[in-house]
Length: 439
Image (tube, rainbow, N blue to C red; front, side, top):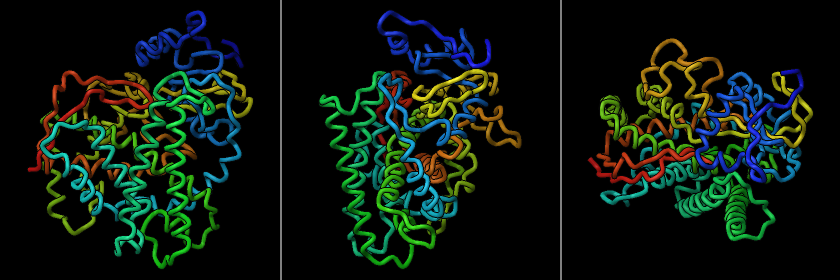
């Protein structure tokens, strides 16, 4: 292949291209194309798929310059200009970093476990949608982290507001995820019920967040009790309401899908692997021994290894996307503005070239002294300037929730053999239902 050539790929069917075959089995289709065309291939004249770890990492590192993060999944409509939003978004990320570092998230651990028990309490003994319950926990925990730690909470003024925002996050994320689950994106101007309801839910969330920002600006902030306090205070450059809103929105929306879905996979894996659950239970006794002390990820090394393996084998963000912003090259291929790069991280995480025994669930691979994968072949939180802002918080939430789940609950999965892996907007354990009983 000559330098500057657009990647080769399957021609597809008349009128529908590759959409029909892709929708029959998304992962199998991508694997088949990777086998036939290599790690870089064209899905359509506008969209290419990149599954080479080095090139994927390069795309992520060059995000905000040659590539943009705002991309609709396999959308053939003309792209909107989004580069102007980048400075505002990055300013918010810089100001929020003190509140999302390792020390700050570890200090939040004592509230996480309480929130976990509070969300499971009302459903004990009932057959429930496991992923929905876990998403509810993560949304409430993250909303508490972002908005629920101010001095006002002592007077009870924040509790209702936190619950209201958490419900709005769930509604907006569910509506948006339903749209993204199709490979055929609907333009925002199309007046169909799905688009209208998604736009209404997102407007409601924006209204609530802007309201909280304005109210917090007007009140005293002697100490930073949560992410919002941190973004509004300090000696760094002041942020306008839009920059604060964008950072809060990103953190809260990210709490809906990935951590909650990962915990759903955890429930299924632990039901199938009682030996793994037994090892976590022994380690999780630290939760009882440190009832009034900060618990960190380092206190639970095996549980952390299980979580890392979950994020390898069942990463919810199985397919990431970027939009090409400039005339640029990637490896020996050339791309023009408006084209898209889709990166199937699932294929990288399951590729025997980069991993030993990738189809097996092996938490112990993370306990050795050597990195268990080839360079850049593990991307649970992305990479580059747009690496997941809440990666430390997300990891802590997952580790503590898995430990509390195993130590404090008996969990029964209903018909585990009928649960299937469904790659939509997220990689979900479709049909996962279960019962939780407090020990």
